[in-house]
Length: 145
Image 1 (cartoon, one colour):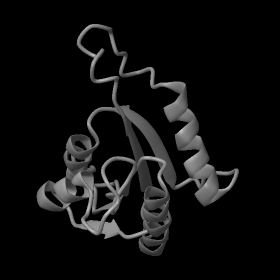
Image 2 (image 1 turned 180 degrees about the vertical axis):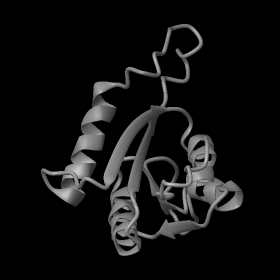
Image 3 (image 1 turned 135 degrees about the vertical axis):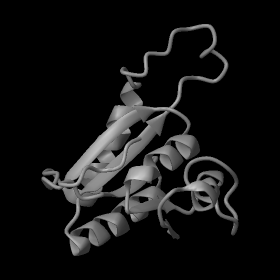
Image 4 (image 1 turned 60 degrees about the horizontal axis):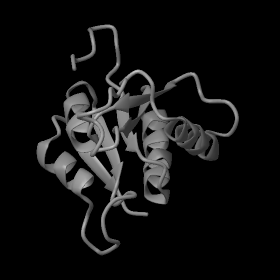
């Protein structure tokens, strides 16, 4: 990913997965972006089924309807029916940790939830938040739900 141009403001980037923790991260990121008067970019990742991705063609431009619905529901819960003009939401094919780390190079802050849909519920941070903290190219904020 490329860094913002001279006339562009680096966004606050938030990774969501539809979980309660990621919605808390979305709320926190929205408050920070508004306070800094910068754009907010919401990124939800989806992957093809791991067992079939090698056999079937997974079109990265056609996310599953369930992912589209989950993104819409998450945005509506946090922002209501109208998405603010400064918010850009994208549904992107890829592994969440890898893609968020790559996208972090053009952000001024990356916000993630402490634990999403994957993994066991415990006191430890999730694999995505751990990877982001260790490898992102901008500051990372991990929001505990």
